[in-house]
Length: 283
Image (cartoon, rainbow, N blue to C red; front, side, top):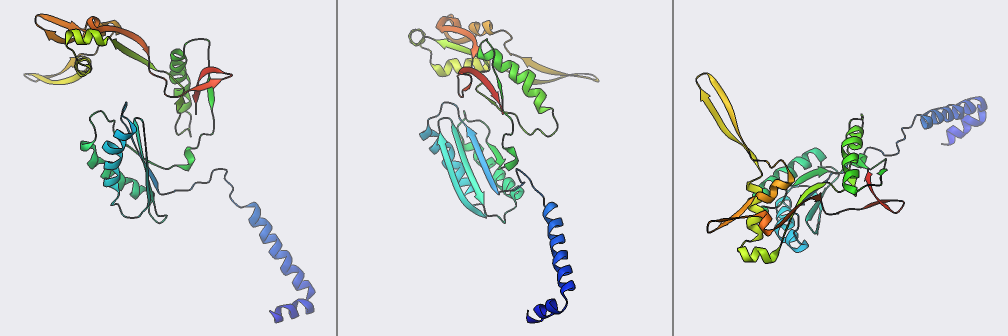
């Protein structure tokens, strides 16, 4: 470094130009640096979500979470495996080392989860495997409120606002918080159930089996082939009252003998407020 100091002393013009060139290059590089409020970073973290409505945290832990953890625990490259079991929901987080390709990790987790599905409870929904996406952070919140019931507000937000926002280029996902969608509720009297010797499982199975549509094969007539479908969907809410639950002797026990049918809304699982009033939030 002594020779550089000697050159700068003997050639001041050269030293000045050298410093100016370094300053110019530095300034140009500074203004051309890429800046992003939410930089794209791929963390090799996979989340597995399983919903089993009505199950207690203990049941979720033993019947769902532990089985999924056992299946994915042997995947190579796992850095951390943690889970959360709450009422009706199982969440399993699989974090891999940074060198692990996130797409490969997601596929390996998906393959292992598929092997667990036959051992999950019959009431559990299909497991959802997702990659941790830093770009999925909500950037806009829209609150919708009106002087009417929350079910109508939810329908408006879902069909008239959510669908239009999702059609905009660059929108990844729109989630509704605090909504109550339409739901047909069947209310039964336990005393009437005991008098007719009917169980809750029989009511559930009857409503499920008598409210489905499924393919029934095809009819071949020479060179003509016709597809056949069994149309068993109930069209009107009041028709649920005539669903036959069981037969006791010569009498068919129907829903209306045990209770009543309500064209109502689902239970509130999340809540959003706008100026202290119930609202629906889209994020």
